[in-house]
Image (cartoon, rainbow, N blue to C red; front, side, top):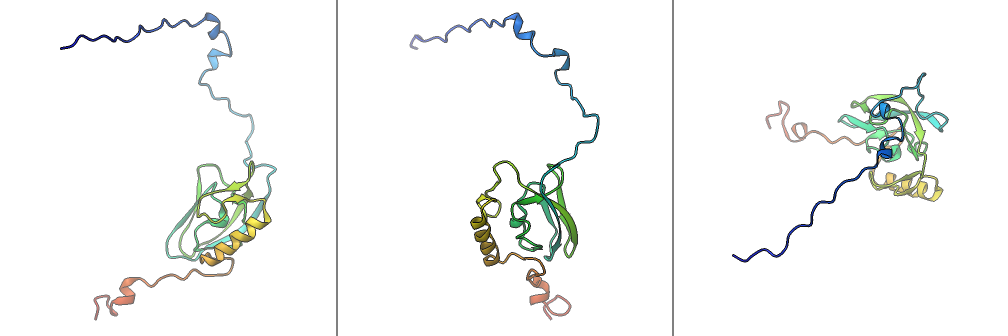
Length: 170
């Protein structure tokens, strides 16, 4: 067997100066400071109250940061008013709509860069742009998304469509 000519270099000695531990407040490491009063989420942001209806035959859940205008096509509501908006609920939570259920919800505008990318690939740009809003509404209508007052065309279940009156084909 050939003799090994290479060997790993020695590990360097770790030198941490004492003053590295003199900054901050070490007794507070990992501590959580709570506010004295309640914290209002989305304070001073534009908001609106709309009615949303699940016209589909399955439950629909919408997450806190989802661009509402692009949510499930069976949800009927004013998508134009909801353009650039999301649910006004705590981060990480969602609102669930059972089939046929309507609910009044509080919505709030996006802040920061105010862009919507992905989701159902209808917006993919700035929610501040009137041109992008018009394009998005056209795409939503072309793809069969429900708007306020419309109903989603629910498909007939196979048992009713192909089965007899007893569901056994007779």
